[in-house]
Amino acid sequence: MSETVKISYGGKDFELPVIEGTENEKAIDIAKLRGLSGLITIDPGFKNTGSTTSSITFLDGEEGILRYRGYGIEELAEKSTFLEVAYLLIYGELPTQQQYEKFTREITYHTLVHEDIKKILDGFPSNSHPMGVLSSLICSLTAFYPGSLDPTRNEDAVNLSIVRLLAKMPTFAAWAYKNEVGHPVNYPDNSLDYCSNFLKMMFALPAEKYEVNPVVSKALDKLLILHADHEQNCSTSTVRMVGSSQASIYAAISAGINALWGPLHGGANQAVIEMLEAIKADGGDTKKFLNKAKDKDDPFRLMGFGHRVYKNFDPRAKIIKKAADDVLEAMGVHDPVLEIAKELEYAALNDQYFVDRKLYPNVDFYSGIIYRALGIPTDMFTVLFAMGRLPGWIAQWKEMRENGEPIGRPRQIYTGAQTRGYVSMNKRG
Ligand code: ACO
Image 1 (spheres, rainbow, N blue to C red):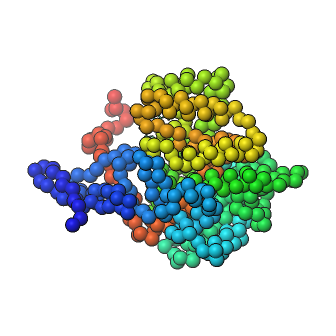
Image 2: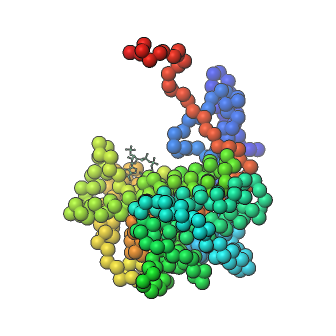
Image 3: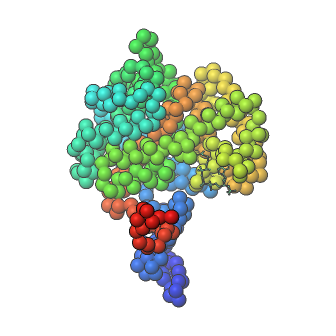
């Protein structure tokens, strides 16, 4: 017999069903609570609220587990490629050789973007933050592919939009960077793999020969895999929320990019490096900054530390830490900022404040260091996060749509003024 929970209120008992996931996670289904009792639930920041059931990503923050469609992140990061993982997330299974080749071929074919998009890009001042440019260019696809505006259209149309998004994202990301530094854009080179093509579009200059370094390209591919999905986080919930109104997939992904931008979410990787640089410039006293982070009167937080769901080591941070060491060694980079990062990590992990609150380094603590070693400028870090997260956003949007989920529309408890009459301006005191 399925389990239930009893709630007593106003002298009455209400019985609500408990639903259970495949990893034994349990939830009270409160959908009927208001109808039965007149009560709603309130949970700012959705700290204890499941917004959906999902079969894409399993995450156990207490145990430090992350799996995409049942496959451990450690194994995928070691053995797979980003496009294979994208296929897995979006279509539910690892592709066969034939499916993989078709998927890769289609993505490669669609990397070029409409020439008029360059005019939109030209309208942005140089120095524009590339995240703002990226979200705008992605949203502009609604104008270039008006056929995609209705997401209830057939599977082929949806699949074409998915391929276009994956194909054009690196082109837009590289162009957002070129705009920022005032360089001419590079067009895609379809003889290259996904990451190498992006690196070439980003770094190649007309006056110089550019060869993609395979160490850089492989490291980037791994980073994208590690960022590919993370269940119902802020940006993914945004994508699902916007998509739930049946807005176009391009509009939903553009909204996700904007949500990711903030320093408490994907923007943390940029904030981490800025923090480490500030510590270095201040003389390198990590203790001083640790104390600032603990001081409740000081708004400073240790960026790259803490996570809403991981109360143990973020499994992605473990893989990235090792990858950072490998990349720095392979490229012969000595980064003093890495030394500060290691010192800070050691000090925080041994400090009672951080131990008590289970604040561990998250994925962003080390990803910024790798990006730096790969020669990626700081304000492009979150753009790379967006490139990595794209298949997850798409998979979640697709699942939401296939499940026929209703429009997202939370309730509230109103705490403002009660009804009152209008007072004309000359009588207001
Ligand atoms: N530095 C210092 N103290 C911290 C930090 C930190 N980085 N993170 C949390 N705390 C403290 C809080 O002050 C709070 O202390 P209290 O209980 O004494 O009041 C306690 O730990 C719990 O923190 P909350 O803010 O309630 O936790 P929440 O789940 O709301 O926030 C978040 C999670 C936003 C990630 C937070 O830990 C943070 O701001 N970290 C720094 C930014 C960061 O690295 N973000 C990237 C997250 S990963 C990602 O989105 C990809």
